[in-house]
Image (tube, rainbow, N blue to C red):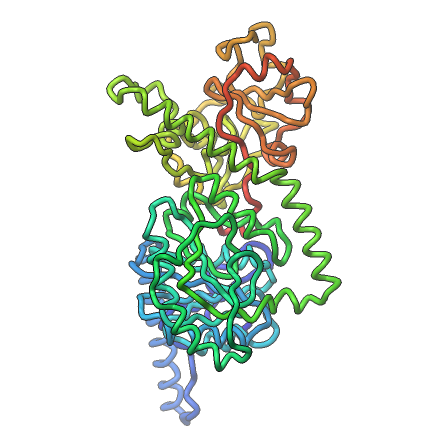
Length: 517
């Protein structure tokens, strides 16, 4: 961290996690070494302070006026912790081998080795967020995503060296197929099918190999089921649909697998740009934990991942089948026959397709339950119903605990009329006492909208009835994150439940520990 008084502090994150932001192109303040004497010195000092104050105020004004504007370039986000020399080399390689318009956002997770100060001295196209606490990989990436202004985004490990042609070749892979949402390169050190054999043993010999390897070759682009999070390229549109990383994972590991599940649920594919090679030194931040601490963190994250997702491979395959069926069913209905006023906007958005029947990409809120209550960082509360977000302009009713979600997630949901009367609000989750059990038959029309049900033989698998479909909470954890417990669950026979068509699943929203997201 910079010493007090060296840099002006801007808006800080919640709690003690203050952050010093350094804008691209801004230089650190340096006071003159020459000291004036008497009135002349006092006058010079006063003029300096006035000029600095005017310059700072103008910088803030320009920053505020440009907030939210997207530039046609790439935001390269590098989370780092106590690896000053590695991140300096990484940034230098970007500056040397990236001709496309870009900005670099280094998020320093409270390093003790002077990383933040070294980055602040870089200037140029480097922006720095120096956190006062270590938010781990997910928290660091999320801070960078919040700051990013590029049309495209790269998430990059600090212990990497990019090479000639790396970004152009990855971008060509991303642009080659509209269904591709996430692209990764190949490297010398990683798990999975992104690792390739290399002829060098010293970094000095790597550059000539990389130049030969990185000759553009679309035949080396291939689909994959997993991309390790050491280097990702994706569009801002994908970020707006999928949202931030889950900060429930400690330090690092499995948060990248978590995010990729959500990318695939949204309808995107993953691809490896085999003609884009970057050098990876290899998990230096995780190795710094020590073998015992690393094993503890890894085991805890693995257990959290399992509790959140269960069997993600089956979940993704099933969801894609459901989305395909919804798209095909929707494409059989002539557009003139659809009454927009009687159709759930979320269902229209999630199933609208081209003439070939392929489903359009989905958004995170397509996997939220009907009738739930959510809040943003400012504390504003919304009810999600009928594919719309309705702001509560009344006090939150007793017994309702809104779930905080990121602002981009909320902005992706069409706004409906505000709720101005408590009489408009139905409880959430819907209590069993409010469900008319006698009206439930073997027809979907008899079920109460929004009720939570489970089959008698599998009580741990819970569903919500929504728009004539049963939507499964993917795990018990997902149901609990939305406030559902056993007192909300109506037990029915398996025959009664399975006669209803299955809709999109309900997943747990990511935990966001940074309240500014």
